[in-house]
Image (spheres, rainbow, N blue to C red):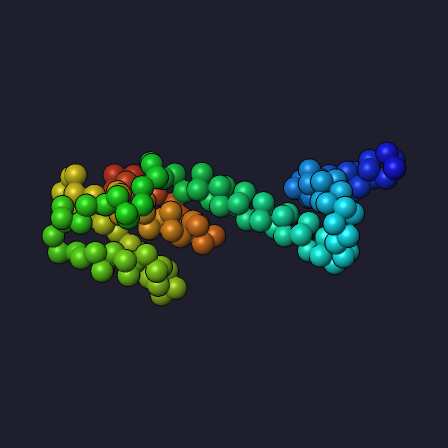
Length: 144
């Protein structure tokens, strides 16, 4: 049995199935104890691996996005801005502008919440597996 465990761990390591490698023993014991069919056991194991990969991907996307902080729309004060309604911003949150290959740039005076809005929308996009990249106007001009 010990040799079989090592073989399974070796395969998991070789195939980069880190979550399966860490969880298969526990799930095997549960499946055996509860008389769970093989296909249900396999589905659970694969689901755990898939969910872990999705989460790691989101965390990587978040790190690469260079967001200065994490803030969502529920903490945004819509009274501070003129010319843009809550409804407009909520429309941007559905990310349809991305499907239309459009960019989104917020311009305005300091301290009105441009960065907060950009970060909120970027967090939503990242949570859906999309790549985002945050830069200030100064960084944008410098890169040109």
